Amino acid sequence: MATSKTSIYDRLLDVRIVDLTKKSLYTLWLFTESDVLTFVVPNTVFGIFGGLSGLLTDTTTVHPDTNRIISHLPKVVAFNWLNLLVFDIANQRLPAAIDEDSLNKPWRPLPMKRISPDAAHILLLSTIPVVLLATYGLGAGPESALLITLTWMYNDLGGGDKDYWVRNGIIASAFAVYNAGSLKLAVGEGSTVSSNGLQWIAMISGVIFTTMHVQDLKDQAGDQQRGRRTLPLVLGDAVARWTIVGPLVIWAVLGPFYWRMGTGGFLLTGGLAALVAIRLLRWRDAKADSKSWKLWALWTATLYFLPLLESLS
Image 1 (tube, rainbow, N blue to C red):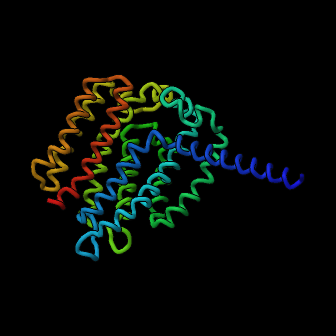
Image 2: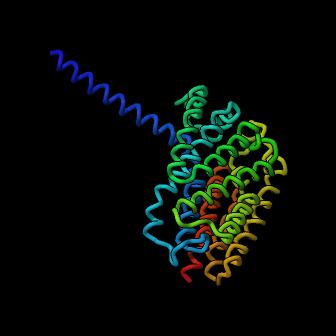
Image 3: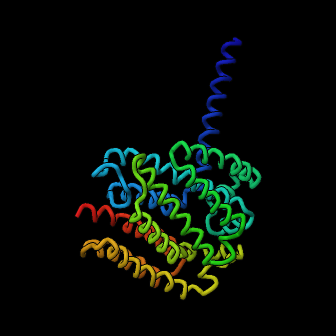
């Protein structure tokens, strides 16, 4: 009888452990869910496509090892998602962020009360060393350390709230590190980012710096409550849209021009840029702006495809 009771207790304990694990993993996913499409996916595309092109790195081989680079895809995704997790926990745990998310993103863990602010603080403290160790093992420890520093500047030092140019500058710097780390992990040992690669990373950061505030259009209600000085709130919604559309069109031309591409390259970047521009000027509610923001992220991925497209021509 005692053995039977012990067996039942062990099974119940196993079920509770599995349920707790699932709940915890889902909570971590909810922290990052709304940013995966616009951060993890484009940055991963940059690394993998850039590595496959062979135009952004100095390598000891004549041609990129396609199978080797594709096999590094899980490492690139893990690097991006783990660092995004640190940023999102750091950002969403702040009292002002909880109030903002209650309006803009009520499905996130803190507004849903899946986790308390104190527990989120403890989670952040434990996540940072885990992420640093994990990414060090992947081969991108210095990049993660720099990203965590930028996360601290953006959230705890208020860099994301006080001035929109500072906000965009921090985000653009973070994208440079994300993209450099993604490219580094994609190509693996034996290759380094070339001067051409560094120039392309810098150009992409220019794209981010001048257009990233597209994400602020959909969040104006929450940002106003939080007291953020985002560009749409400081200059007005109409002006903010034109400050995105102008650079969007310019970068859609400069990207293919940088790679000396033919009509195909210009059609690739220009077609989607035109769609995003029209949407931004024509449909101006929060739901439409959220979709435009996702299309903007897809547009950046078309820029990331240009080196590979050029290498295949």
